[in-house]
Length: 193
Image (cartoon, rainbow, N blue to C red):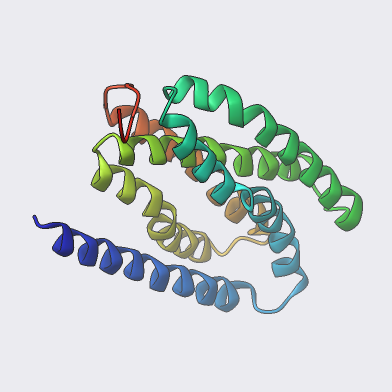
């Protein structure tokens, strides 16, 4: 496959995932409406997204570190700072929003941090030549949430917030598990001698 064709295909797949993301929001609105139940769910999702705001910096830092160190050293350099950021962000959300469930709040913070782990693994695998498997794994949550939300809607739960929140929380664990199956040599990724 030529580089140009591969790039257009990547844009197409990413565009489809973006449309699925919009459909996910529409499905949650259809299921929960603009209600207090939806507000409760959005608190936990906001923690994930708040922690995940650091992901682009994690990706860029990983790209730079991979040029002189392997993935384990890049992870050791970046992830402790990411964990500190996740703890502080989760604490700010707890203090400001006072969510109903401390368990869901902590799980949301952990999920945001696991997204950082996943971003480092995706970046490493893409740069080491496994672009498509890593790219598809990075898009997987958007594609998997739709049937998960539909299943929760079909169950007609009195309180769907925990099920919907856990659906979002477990996805980085699944992604990391799949990325561990994508084998690449953990070598230094020098761009020039």
